[in-house]
Amino acid sequence: MALWHNQSTIKLASLLATDTEKGLSDQEVAARLRRYGPNKLRQGKRFSAFTIFASQFKSFVIWVLMGAAAVSVALGETIDGIAIMAIVMINAVIGFVQEFRAEKAAAALAHLAAPHCRVVRNGHSMVVAATQIVPGDILLLEGGDLVAADARLIEAAVLRTNEAPLTGESQVVDKRSDSLPTETPLAEQKNMVFLGTSVTGGSARALVVNTGMETQLGQIATLLETAESGETPLQQRLNRVAHLLLWACLGVCRT
Image (cartoon, rainbow, N blue to C red):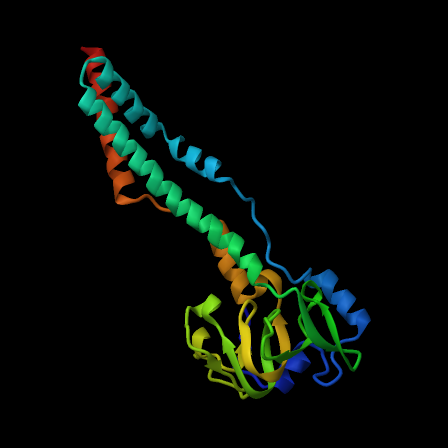
């Protein structure tokens, strides 16, 4: 992803082929929508709570443990059987909670997007659907607005934003429009505003640089969508126990 905070707004306007005063034309917006797609976060496949819980029992070793519990009960070792089943259920609950939280977090990201925003197009200020924003658009921001895309500030008048949804920082951030060093971390990029954050005060004019899944919030959504949850220590131990039981059973059958 390109760096935007370390360059002048004049250079960025040239790179994005836009006019910081008049904005884009309707024809150019239509062309960029075809190129970049709508400004929205991709919704991955969602699963119900039941499906997530049921998936915790797909592992072969889990079935081995359940079989061992059943055999223990059949042989009169009821306490052992109950103990094994309790461990299996604890493992399932832990796995369910982890995956369910990730599922809820991914779904919550979609609600951070603004439904509408104010932009400059054809030299005029207008309100448009946030999904129709494209790189090169000029956003007009004021207190109470949700930021509709990642944008580089062109002008900022006592602008303050709440970036807690993105950085976790609960304090409002004072913004300014001057360029920053290349190594400036995301949380300190005071000349940028980001999709999903909100304006708590002041006003600004900003140049949209990224939309949809290319935004910082979009990257988080991609990570949530593609992340694979690793095994917990309990799951690792259960796998080892299950393999030992399986080999023990095979040894008994051979003798």
